[in-house]
Image (cartoon, rainbow, N blue to C red; front, top):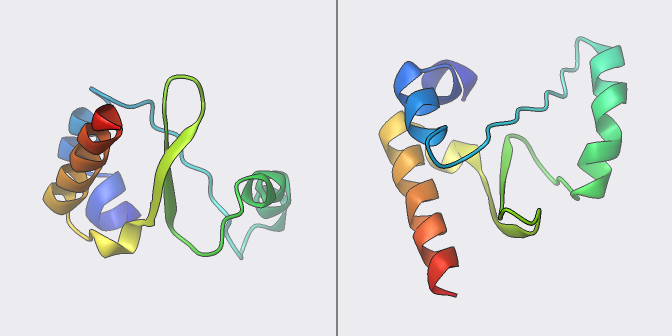
Length: 90
């Protein structure tokens, strides 16, 4: 996902207009980083990777999904925009 979506300029530019982007990594090859981020994985009940969680301005989760469901920048941006529209209708 990092190679095909998250590192792309069009993703960063498009998503950062409406969202604050935060990436937490859980690399198998770096036990220190994994250990540091594990409490957040537990707090947010992450069941698989890569998981995307969208929060409102108050820090309340309004949706989550596996990023791999939307493997292109265009599909990913469309999905998060739809999720934001739906949240605003609720």
